[in-house]
Length: 328
Image 1: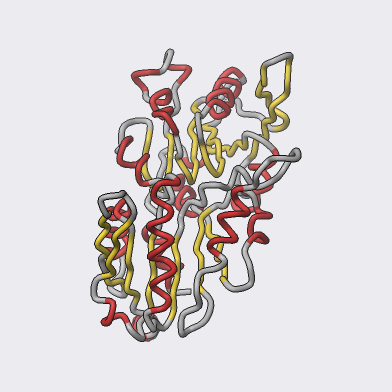
Image 2: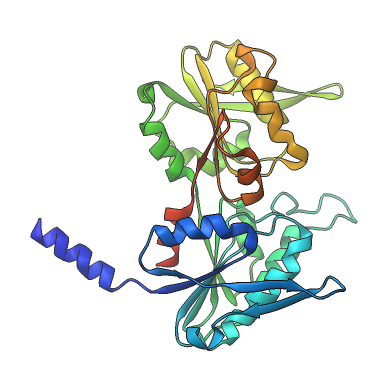
């Protein structure tokens, strides 16, 4: 026991002290990150605007962070807020800091990562190129921490002047599943082959179901490709949800094939136009149309603020994982 305690104390002594700046939208998550570690010290920025609407920004205590490890917690929830944050992100490394880490939990243009016909614009590539131009700090290239990026090939969109660090929210799900009363009766379902490729190695000790979407006329029908949900608590796993149509169709087909309960997990709950409302228990068509649990993370703070903890939603915070990533 004394050896373990001494090892922990030694590890704590070698922790980097991080000065964490954050955008206004991420304040709640930043507070959780700071509360999770004595090595995190929150810093502030004055997010002001001129009369014409353009940013008028000020980094508080800029002189005090010289020679220090600095991080910025960002949320690119809409194009309107990206420019002001990019301005700060480009300014911080130039303040003679020891190192700089950008934490961008959700890479928002991820579903627009490829060109399918002439004229399409791959905005994921554009955003990756912008982030690749972040100036170096005194300690070298910027580290960019991103959770469950939508397409794995997007890691190759970043240039050599930044160090992308790709993390996942799946450990949060695993921890929550172990707490369930029916933890021994869990089966994992993937809505398509893409989700299976992304996550199956992290969940391989569970029985699995793979669904797929087939076109019948003008409709896309979800069917079970492999696996058996009968009598099981089936948890659908994907990286993000937009309108939620695919998850809803998966839930219906799993229930019709005998699933005892159906839940869902997504790292990024985007839910444009309040589409989360279709999953609220009070808005469901009936008991067979409900999710037992719908787990999300706080990678999209505006959604978390709107949803709260209203059933069936539960928020699994990335705070502890971000603390660990900042110590890499």
